[in-house]
Structures are given as C-alpha cells and as structure tokens.
Image (cartoon, rainbow, N blue to C red; front, side, top):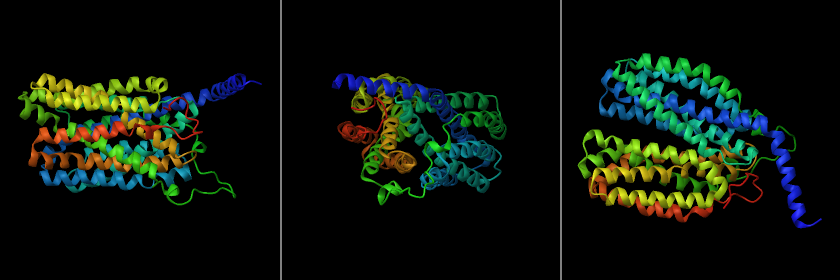
Length: 418
C-alpha cells in the first residue's frame, strides 16, 4: 500500500472515530461554552456592583481593598487543589459542584450587612471562582482533544459576551434603583436552575479522572504536581498578557482623560472598545486557528497587540487612542485562550490537563492582582505614557515566543499546530 493510500486510510479511520464520538462530544462542546457564559454572568454581576457595595456598606478604600484581596487570594489558593480534585472526581463533577455553589455565594455577597460578612462571602466566591476557572478550562481541553478541532476561543468569547451582558444589565438595574440584594437574588435564582442542566451535558467524569487500576502509574516528579518547565513558560506568558489587560482595565480611562483630554464619558469607552473587539477576535479565533495553526495565530495576534499599543501612544487625540485600545483588544483576544489550550494539551491525557491549567491559571490571576498596582506605581514615577510604552517590549517578546505554542507530537488535538 502506498504512503498516500495509507495516509488516506488513517484519515478515514480518524473521521469515522470522530463521527462515532460526535453526539456526546458535540453536546459537551456547547455545554462547556454554556458553563463559561453562566460563570461569567455570575462573577461579572458581582464586579459591576462593587461600587454599590462600597456605598451601601460605607466601606473605606482600605476596607474595600481588603475585600478585593480576599477574593484574589482565595481564588489562587483554591485552584492549587484542582488537579487533585479532577484526578479523583473528574472535571465535570468539580464544575457541577462549583457552578451550583456560585449563585449562593453571589446572593450572600448581595445580602452582606457589614464588611466582615462581605469579606466572608467574597472569600467563598473567590474559592469557587478559582476552582471552576481551572476546571472549566481543563474540561475544554479534553473536549478539544476529542472534538479534534479548536474550541477554546469560543469558550472565552462566551465569557466576554456574558461580561458585556452583565455590565449592561447592571447599568439598567442601578439606574432603576434596584438594591444589590435584590439584583443578586434575581441573578442567582435564575442562573442556578439553568446551570445544573448545562453542567450535566459535560463529558462523563471518566474523561479525565485518574484511572483506578492497580498497575496505574502516577506521573512522577514535577509533572505530578504540574510544575514543569512548559508550565512555567506558559505561565509567564499568561502573566505578561494579564498585566497588559489589567493595565487597560484599570488605567485606560485615566489615560484617555488625563493624557488625551477626553471627557469622562468618552474616557469610559476605552475599556469598552477593548472588550468589544476582544470579543470579536475570540468569536473568529477557533476557525482561524484551525486553518492557520496555534503558532501563526499567536504570533500574528501578538504583533497586532503591539500595533495597538503603538496607536494608543502615538495618537494625539482621544479618538485615535480609543481606536488603539480597540486594536489592542483584537490583538490580545486569542492569546490567553491559546495559552490555556496549549498548556492543557501539554499536560497529556487524564487529569494532567487540569494540573497544568491550574498552575498556569495561578500566573494569570497573579497578573490580574498585581497589574493595576504595578502600573500605578510605575505611572507615579515615570508617567502613564512611559508605563504603557514599557509594556510594548513585553508584548514583542510574547510574539517572539510563539513557537512554544506548537502542540506536543502525538497530542491528537486536531489541526491546531504550527
């Protein structure tokens, strides 16, 4: 048999295998996308009501800072155990439990009567959020491997869309003078019954649970705990990207208002433009990744992000800099999803994906936590222009690191290579 006919036969067998697995895998593909969407709605509802919580409870800036820190620290600590939980129970069950817990945590936040109750509720919410963040990304990797085509960008697009929906809904209910307690009660009450059937559509626990076999050998050394060289590389890339995103989230409005003379209303559009075009990029990300591969997609979008930073800084008017933030959002859109996909596939079969993803997520959360403060500290010393300019070399290095996105040989993840 010729090499060509042999290759054709292999492709036919792969296609047949994919078709036999299609019903369950296709259902899981939309189920995990729904998990991202519901999770985003729940967490974004909390985020948009933070100013209302501060005002209604009479919190000082330092008290609010402690509350926000409780969320981040709880999330980072909780995600360290996700690998072990997935190994024992499977990522689907971890997602089901945490997705069911989040509405209750959200309602507890809304009904908090003082700073202590708020801190306790936010800590629970942070622990649940950190757990489900790592678990749902790990589950998406398993679905991606079985589906044999990229899906991670679509999952993150669902989260971005949910954040936009929650922001618009939050603005509407705040304008209608709806209390935080009533708002969170309605959101939690509606999403809890929606979350359970969505989570039940995920792959079975056996898809990534540790096999219970007498002769099963667990990974040794660093691989067992997820701290490998590959994870550190992907984690550092994620840290850089989340530093950049945190800078835009926290400081784009200040940059436009104080640096480019924009009105407060126009300045508020900076993060909106970034998020909107980031969502557009993610919606188109999966088919483009399937066509061009992870390496070229990662490199191209990182270079677009560099161009976005340049436009932001070179623009002398609010409109031009606003367009720069839009370009920057489009450029960064697929980068973090591609990192999660790559690090998950590097973890191999079984719970390895969850171990690797949870460790990489630690870096991304660190970027979110320290990014706003780091940018503020640098801006105090050298100004916001130079601080934003300092992020450009980091993004250039990110583009130069694109080759690490190449899937391991024999990964079986479908056409997402270089």
